[in-house]
Image 1 (cartoon, rainbow, N blue to C red):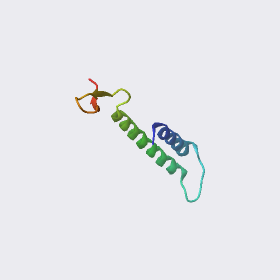
Image 2 (image 1 turned 180 degrees about the horizontal axis):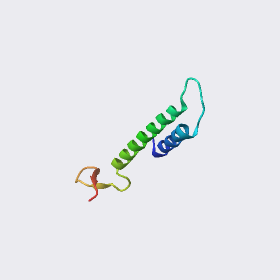
Image 3 (image 1 turned 135 degrees about the vertical axis):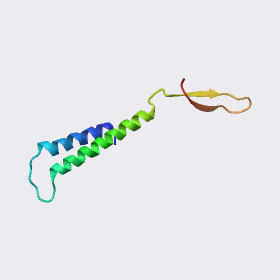
Image 4 (image 1 turned 60 degrees about the horizontal axis):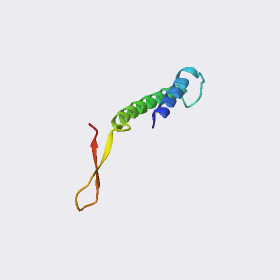
Length: 80
């Protein structure tokens, strides 16, 4: 789940929890809204945690190392 989907779930959950006042049999729309907000917040936190560990663009560079008599191979090292 991405950041956009998480924000969407939080918004829909807030609308259902605080803006909708409908009495239905068998389902509590306010509770559904609270559940959607909780899932959205958890998804947002997890997305932010994994986004920060991803490293972004330019976090790694590819070095070509040539050895005599063999094919080049690629060595991934963090940029200094």
